[in-house]
Image (tube, rainbow, N blue to C red):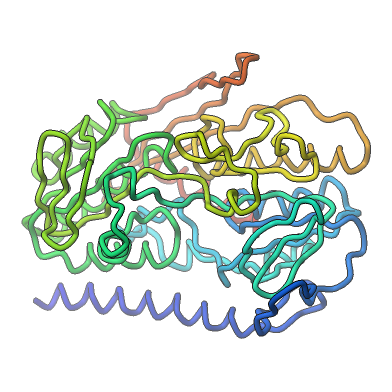
Length: 446
């Protein structure tokens, strides 16, 4: 009993840290014109209260790994740009590395960073606001605090969840799933909730689903399963992680993950491939597959993803695509027919990994494209994104596996992995590299 209370107390303490940081961020004041506090709501056609642009205004919507990188590198590529990053969250929490936080291998502080610091150190404006729509004719981004005019716009809004794809269309059932069994791939409250679930789990079946399509961070559900299983094993919890995978096999690093499942978590992980989910009863705690039903005690239910709904409001989504991603030139990233608007990160349609390293390398290229266009220069040739991804499969000692890859273009709109280097022999050395990889990215973004 005492160990359970200790874990709960630790969780409450970490939750209080995040709450305090959020409240502090919400109370910020403008500092040298580089950060703007959320002001009282302004409706209609009023202009947002921002300093007057000192050059061509480049607006970036979305403060994830892609948006933060675009904002920084737009300014580096064209110092004349007046860059504004618009993000609804008051503080940053990383989705990459969050799985190992579940196993207490890093602190919440390691994942959390200040948008104010990023804006100050990289010489752009952070505007803490919610984007409602985009008027591309007038070149205005509409927020609840008024509009922001732009000369160039980069949309990096990330993903939303498509619960209808797993047979959940009733609003009440969808809300119950989102609240009680969150997917945990939109950073913030979802991660805090899953952390609590793991800390307080008393036994039984914990389900982790893996969705269809090109979902955010292909290896992440399997890594998370390992971290949850490691917590059960360490705390002698009589439970198992049941992985329900829509795919016929693990999507990436299959040999490394299978080895971990079989050698480290034989009594704690059960892997079920080719499970197409057609319904979920969140009250009876039953997942319905095409051929079987699965009862669970707790879960992280990850439905198929789609691009953020903002793309529809902006009129730049491909509504015929299975994930409603951006309708863009796949080599230049601009919206088809509009060289003033670009889409970067997990909302783009190309089959690249929807992961941190990929998003950041891609964002640097997008910044080069936008800057060259703004200065009337020849656009740089297409550069492949870079996918470097470590997955921790054992907590004590911390051991990881990895993949390092680029992409090739077939000249017809299609892409494939290229120059793939897979290291599926788990090791402590790769576990340490995972942390250094994260620190390097955080230093550059913030």
